[in-house]
Length: 260
Ligand code: KIV
Image (tube, rainbow, N blue to C red):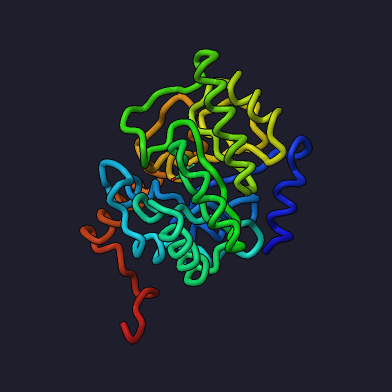
């Protein structure tokens, strides 16, 4: 497990880190062939459960999805998001990180930052559980979407936050929706890799929500590239199935399990 973490860190300034989200085994199996990091993101609250934000996602739901993903992730580093409210103080954070680690057999947990979580990251890493940080637009703490790092003061604050997260022991950090300049400065000043989402190509790696790149979520902000349009592929298949059933074209004799 620690070797996997070391290999991620070694990629900094050399090879771009590829990362996507997975919420279940079948998708994770495909991702695992091409990704360095597979994240069981709490975005599953919005994407799968149709919740308006990630705030009410339970630890139990996160555990169930992570257990499913673990069944298929063999090669990549599996990171699990800690849901909001599961790391409100160092003791609770350590207890829940251990619970996630033990039950899902993940390689690391991810914690969103609200400029106060450094002690929490320290406590979890002290318990030998690797932590990925997350700054910028952190949906668990910020209600309104905003690009961060548009001025000097904001950029300096973000850089300080990133450095404190690194010092607390995190092995990597997600930069969500930062200006290219802020992403570049932070990436240059950290020893640990930065993984960007909506934060330009200056980061050491990239992460996106898989359902977005597959054209399934209906969420396509400018930083998302649709690499496929699965919605229309699935719709075509379902339409054909419906037509075949109605027209008695399915099932055919060859689909019968016994007799004619
Ligand atoms: O929950 C999530 O999917 C995330 C990534 C988009 C970084 O945190």
